[in-house]
Image (cartoon, rainbow, N blue to C red; front, side, top):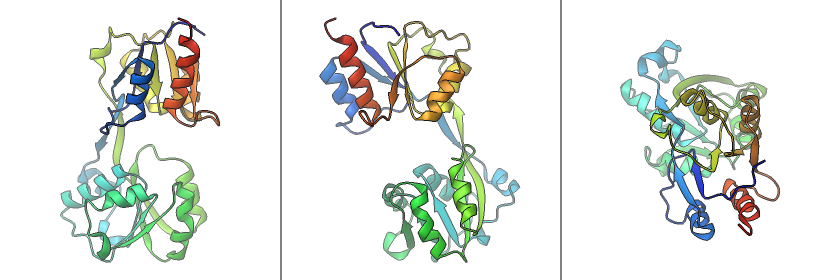
Length: 252
């Protein structure tokens, strides 16, 4: 593991839009340069391709929404299909953040909206209560495997629809750019690195990963993982970065 001072970090996500982001605090506190660049992005699936999945929006009485992307692409697809969303449609939102985002599209107080706590499993009691509904899960092509297992266990009538895809971004302009730390948050982000730079050699670059699936993908690609989050000590990526940098830059 290299013990070189950390001066530059590339975070493989969009730049935060809030001024008080912990990344900006990290940058100011530790005097390191933090850049942001999404290694992956989301693209909507066309109405034609959604229909090809044998999905007829008029057949569903409830929608399960797991993310803001799911919200955006459900309403985009409905508009492309010229489908008028019925007022009595039920919305089951994985978290308060998703439910809050839903207000961009519907008048909250006039709709039937049910909200989980945080994890998808938290929605189970709510969905079970309305088990006679016909549920649509508009989602990505890279669906968390826990979700179908949970829905099948509830013995409900549900259908998965691929409404958007996670695709690799073009990073060719970064070819000659070097960073001390690269921070990744998904297995697809790691795959993007190698699709864009098939000859990538880690050398002294430190790899930071969030989550066990991201870590496993990094290891499978022959990378050395230097910084891991979440851990009991550092539950966030910024916390893990700060701990590593304080230890590594000490006395340098």
